[in-house]
Length: 116
Length: 112
Image (cartoon, rainbow over the protein chains, first blue to last red):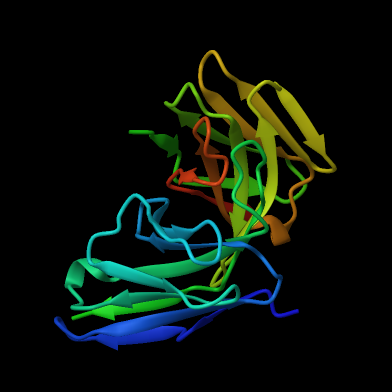
């Protein structure tokens, strides 16, 4: 089991360029998440997908779009990159979306994105 | 909104105990978590505690929760060099046990 995989590992973009970050999990999890991690701050939730076919905004969704392609894959798209989107992006997955249960989230290794 | 705060850095000697502290503001938090991030890696769940508990022990890890003061701590007994990492506390508000709010992280450095 690879767990949660992310591609690419590193990326440099110019302002205004677009790109898609890919995430896949092989644990048959129902829920998937995208976070960003900035220096001196905790991870912040960008978007999540509680189950296949649904997506919802998190804390910082502006400038991003997501697609839950199937149960395994959840992609994050930057349509017009800005320097403020320079960050480390983490994808995560969990067995379920808990209203009462703390489903453990499993994280990928991250994508380091620099926008110049 | 919710706010979760931690001190930025802690240095301990190998074999000593480490205590990492966290304060949070959301009194409706249902679960509080500790995650570990090793260099170049994603986060890994260490342990969590339900808000109606005040202590949880798991091998070398002890979590203490003071709900009145909204204070959470993680004690690592017999700290090893492999424990060097960034430790994040996180909480979930009532009704959404999957929407995590993370603290800023505490970098633990273990020296010989």
